[in-house]
Image (tube, rainbow, N blue to C red):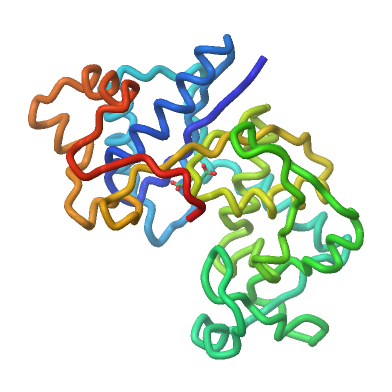
Length: 278
Ligand code: GLU
């Protein structure tokens, strides 16, 4: 049975792009007789707000989307992230780092999917681990796993290239996790077999595949769907004036009809779907 998921971060309102992503996750599960899950990615304490969770749940119900299990909240799973972090430390694959964002930007020689790539400054150094972030030694990790592949059902089989991220932070200094670690663990814990998300996270799957190999997790198939983009090709975003789903819901718009229009590819003027790598 296939299991898909929609995984919003409650740090702001959902907009049309999120509606599209939720519909893809939901409809793929329905079309194939599987389950669609809702996961709330609320571990970013600085930006997550509980009030957004209720709004997101109401928006999704307004669109007519139903989920097959009670929503999972990442903030309730910190212990499992901590345990995975400890096992990666025991393998000698994590190292502490206290570099600031400004130091990394100044020292970086290339840009990766998440911005300036950390150049490995603290690798092999003795750094006080108290209050430090922990980074994955990607070269050592790859030496352990050997070459890896993963499959996106739209783009085909990919040779995993996690090095493009550099040595990413897996345990933040304020959290026993990071997006990459938490999302990878959750997909495994919840038995997600088809990771449904936008093309903006295509590159993340190179790293998630490595984490799966290191942690002995099952390997899903991925489905990275096209993104709703503005005429300039940039991802649709609330800050550039697209109304939120909550605004539309409160204004009395019919959410089921909106979901139907999105399914039929009917988009607002100037907005289109793009499969370009972001
Ligand atoms: N929480 C992420 C977002 O809102 C999605 C993560 C994922 O689907 O893996 O962009």
